[in-house]
Length: 50
Image 1 (cartoon, helix red, strand yellow):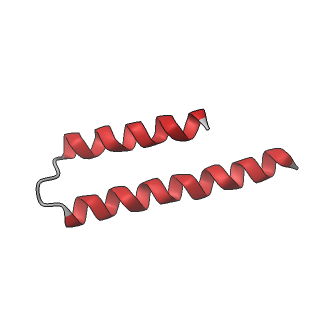
Image 2: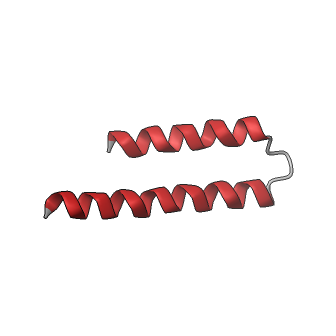
């Protein structure tokens, strides 16, 4: 049961990471692909730790 809750939480967190990355890519004109990928990697590493 606890594992199911944890998976649901991770899915929601992942969806939030993707949403933020999309918004950054669309709204920030100075954002490069490399910087966006670095940000996503950092967010995903934090997701795995928690």
